[in-house]
Image 1 (cartoon, rainbow, N blue to C red):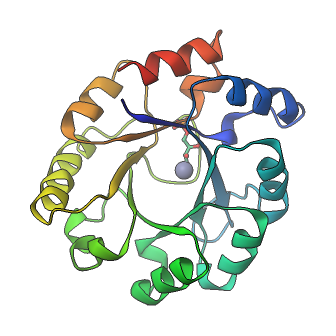
Image 2: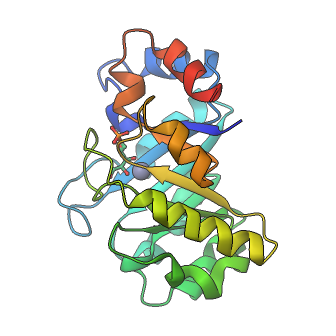
Length: 215
Ligand code: DX5
Ligand code: ZN
C-alpha cells in the first residue's frame, strides 16, 4: 500500500484546524508541508512558524519539502519546529552531501528532490546516505498543475537503481497526482504519493484519501 502524503498547500488556511482534523481521522500517513521562498521557486508559502502549529495538530509524520535556496541556514529551525523528514532540492545545494549530513546529524530523515529536468542519475552517489527521493512531476512552486508524463520513466529508472543497490529509499512523487494516474505511478515503482488538489478539492476528502491508499 502506498504512503499517502496530502499537501497542505491546498488546504483552507482560514480553517486549518478542520483540515488537520480531517487528515488525522483519515488514512493519510504523512503531512506534506511545502516551504517556498520566492527565490528558488516563484512563490512564497510558509515557514517554520506554521510547521510548529502543524506539529502540535498531529502525530503523523511531518514531511517538509524545502523549495528554498541555502537550506542549510534553516535546517535547525525546521528540526525545532518538528519536521520528521527534511527534503532539500538537488538544484539548490552546491554541497548536497554536506546538507544531507547536517539533516541526519540533527536527527531527521533526509530527502532530496529533483526538478523535472534533473536526471535521476544525479542522486546515484548519495543514494545510500538518504531516506527519500522526491521526484517532481510538475515544476515546483504551485499546486494544481498537470502531471508531466515522463516522470513515469524516471520512477522506473530510480526504482531500478535503488533495487540494484539493495537500498530502502522512498520514491515520492510530487505534483499533479490524481486518482487516474496514481495506479501508473505505483506500478512504475513509487511508494509515496503527494496529493494536494486531488485531496483538498474533492467533495469527500477522507474518501479520496482512502481511494488513494487502496491502490
Ligand atoms: C509543488 C508542491 C506540491 C504541490 C502538490 O511545488 O511541491 O507539493 O502542493 O499539489 P498538487 O497535488 O495539487 O499538484
Ligand atoms: Zn511538495
